[in-house]
Amino acid sequence: MNILLRYGLLIALLGTVPSGVQATPGLLDGMSFVGLNGEAGKPLDPDEHEEITFHDGLFTSVSCEPYHFGSAEYSTTEVDGAIHFTAVTESPTHGKISWQGVVKGRTAEVGFVWTKERWYWNTRREYWFRGTL
Image (cartoon, rainbow, N blue to C red; front, side, top):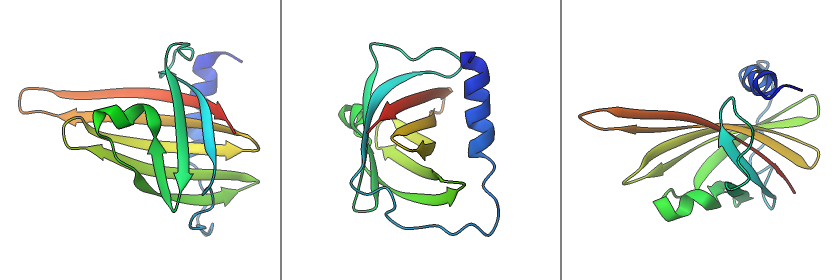
């Protein structure tokens, strides 16, 4: 499937969680997904290794830790056998990253947006991740 189409479908799916679906705290706890990151609309970058982890109700991006992005609480909902999650990680020096992902089986596909506001310009970059347990 074309990478642009796949990313577009991921974004569409992330934004369509039916109302009335119950959130389940800690649903992904104990899971770690290892894979690659890439810029939105482009193939995954073979040099951008990533691991995302879920533990004690917290989401962590291992590749973002050197930039002082801490762990953050995550929320989940289950829809048609897939687990949708969101989290926002923050760094005192590098801004924030908003994460939205879908876990289906042993695979996680995640879209994330890094933003950093400055008085002289703002940064907004979109990325994606695919990893497996």
